[in-house]
Amino acid sequence: MENREQLNFVIIGHVDHGKSTVIGRLLADTGSLPQGKLEGVQEYCRRNSRVFEYAFLLDALKEEQAQGITIDSARCFFKTKKRDYMIIDAPGHVEFVKNMITGASRAQAAVIVIDIREGIQENTRRHGYIVSLLGIRQVAVAVNKMDLAQFGREPFERVKRDYGAYLAGLGVSVANFIPLAARDGENLVTKSDKMPWYDGPSLLEQVEAFESGDDASVLPFRFPVQDVYKFTQGDDRRILAGTVSSGKVQVGDEVEFYPSRRKSRIRSVALSAGVDAKEATAGQALGFTIEHPLYIRPGEIMAKVSEKKPPYSGRRFLAHLFWMGSSPMLAGKNYLFKIGTLSVMARIAEVRSVLDAGELSSAGAKDKLERYDVAECVIETVKPAAFDRASELQAAGRFVVIDNFNISGCGIVLEAIESGTDSLDERTKEREIRWDRGSVTQAERETRNGHRSKFVVIAGENGEWARGTAKALERALFVEGSQAHYVGLATLERGLESDLGEGLPDREEKIRRLGELARLWTDAGLIVVTGLSGVDRYDLEALRRLNAPSEIFVAGTADGPLEGETPDLVLSSSESPQSSAMRVIERLREKEILTDFQI
View 1 (cartoon, rainbow, N blue to C red):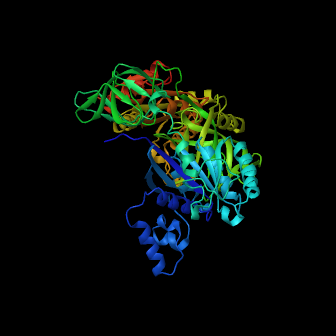
View 2: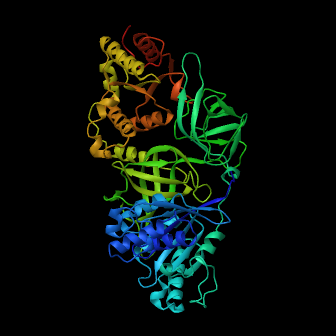
View 3: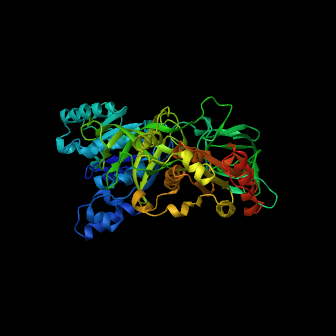
């Protein structure tokens, strides 16, 4: 079978500007319709006393025909001698912007359709911004219905001047403005003799001139880890599953994971069950094994050490964000961000400017984004994330925002920002300033209790063992007369749906609440005990900062996500919870946290 080149391009336009007519006529004139399709639609229109429109070839759904607008992103195909094409018909109505973004995100080029009579509408400007937001670099503008302007040059030049300036302000370079009368096929496939003043290409000629894009295999290697499968029964292998988004890698190549910065080498490449390869390249869905049994989380990005352009990793980045949610996006509120395979809670730390997508003017800084607002924001993630600048690698430079199960926003990463002071620092600093201290000193509490206050974290990959050990420790301390109290993450679930929105991950919020609660109880002189599974060094860092100025004591197993963290005591999940609890008590006595009781 011939391996033909393919180009995917999106056609965008305000409702009733003739976008579907452009596509329908293009399919008809290139002989790409199924046999009898055109005649069948024409006969349907005749029987129902309707004027035939080429748009009917696309708007096949009865609901869409009745409303006269294209609701969802539809795909259709045609071919020329040069290559194969997929046209993405993106909806133009303002209420279906989300569907338009979904369609356009798969495109290598874009054609924006403008009605010469109605001119540049607010949604036309918004579509231009979304093209910019998605990083589509090949753009043509089709100025349609020129027959209604008597094929005059002056109205065409006016649209070209005004919209060209608007797109230039967004950094979008237009290959050509093309005057069309799509219904009659003027300047669609071949040049029209009704506009002799126009010396550019027809629409099809311009589409043929678009390039199919860079070969993703020559870009820096990126493998976003989608999932990790671990074998049992003496086999320590972990299969890292996902799709190579760009670049190439070979067995034996040294790789590094971001943001954890753990390193290893590729041991094997599994294309499918029992089918291995020596190399993996962009677009392949597969599994890797690496030489070391590292604990890698889904959402991390694997890159080659030998390449000079690694992903960025950190907790802050500058972004362009487009909000589509029915409720405003509030600065400071946590939302679920999805970047590649990573799902992470994040917030707007700073709204630098809000752009009026209609006028391309700045509305200045705000504390919230209304529906269809476009903003330049500083985004702060709860945990470090790995990403690329969208201008360099689009796959890891785009993100979507989830609010109450819905994709309510999207954006692109402009650049990484040095962390500096973050929201957690600001929160704890303000908390300590406002802290209203009592009249009993810490020294007095230690004398009364016979021990210092401490936040003890039992961490292990086996959650049942970690919680069991923590509860056994609480019991042993209580029996010996210490003021100890166990608290689990499940205790902190109350009110999470109202705080975060139904369906959003709440682990990070539970960690925050746990740290704040521990700060109160350690200030009261207690030994606070908890057992956590899946806790990593970022969770522990958050707990340390939230519990400050009191300290935490970490006892954990050597395996699992604590890799890279040096616990105060290394335990084994093969030990009983009671035995592990007694080892923790021994270490607490060595550190003089337990000062006045005998075991």
